[in-house]
Image 1 (cartoon, rainbow, N blue to C red):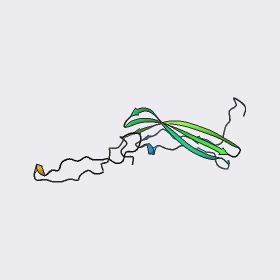
Image 2: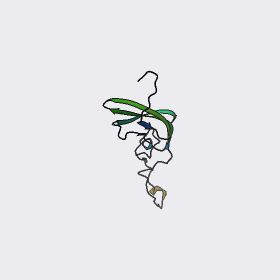
Image 3: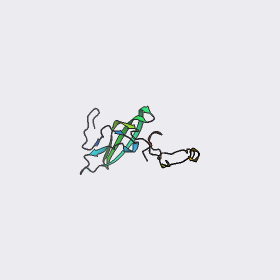
Length: 130
């Protein structure tokens, strides 16, 4: 390859559109094109970085990396898309007591602590991401 020359590859990474999702695990994955009969294999990975926000509303830059290889050559392509990960759904309590009727106030049991579904994602607020 000559220095300064532009090389065009038939195989390429295809980045997803920016997405608004409730859970980090729902972010779309990049795909690739042009592998048919090329002899290339591809290894697709990604990394995430917090761009802005905290807690329940964050902008995440996901950098997708496609490494194309075959015995006589290899190359890497990447793209970055900023996605929004926000808590769009209220948490679901797993141990909330059912309705009950009491005749006297002193029959009402003391309140107990409630727990939400397991916490998964970038912060404590993504409680529906189990």
